Image (tube, rainbow, N blue to C red; front, side):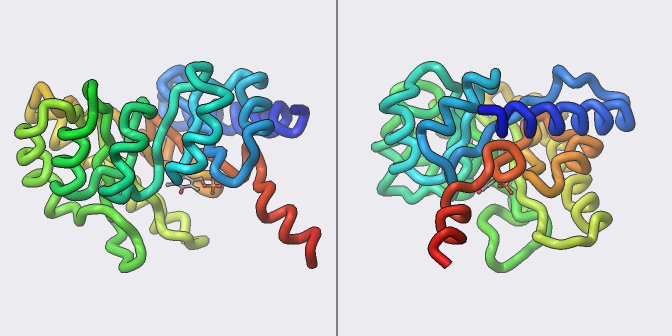
Length: 234
Ligand SMILES: *Cc1c(COP(=O)(O)O)cnc(C)c1O
């Protein structure tokens, strides 16, 4: 518990500084505690520390934690979503951060019993290994989503490249912001696209400076129990 409380204090301080630099309000930033590397017990500690948004990247992890935590949290699914797993999880989550293909939209539309808040995932840095649409594809893709009334495009999501090059990271976040503004300006009712899901443990301050509204923080906030236990085995 103290681990998370102390981490959260540091992160909140950093958020405040980044907001000040950018002339933004701290209340515009939502922290998603990414609990994919930690136990249900530690996820509960995160809630006890005052966090209310949790992120998971696998159906198994989400459902397991949900069994205990249920409606104490707002649930974010941040990993790539296999079409055949949609049915199991789609009514158990509040936000999906990884909408990246029409076949997935079709399956969500078919299986969901309510409107699903979705982020369209964009591969701004054009890295081979990353999921997401290329920036050029995003607008056409979002226009096609008008056929699926269960899908609401709340915003865009990206992952910056894993690099020390801060300016490269910044340019990726800037690119996503530009695209978000372009889509929001179209005024689609099903795609308000007001939100930006970007920034992780290593780059959330830059993301905030560039307009992030949801930051997804795992290691720096709740730690990584899997890595710790691997280290014990060595
Ligand atoms: C794991 C993960 C995070 C959190 O990563 P940390 O570096 O541990 O903060 C954020 N977003 C996505 C999509 C992830 O898979």
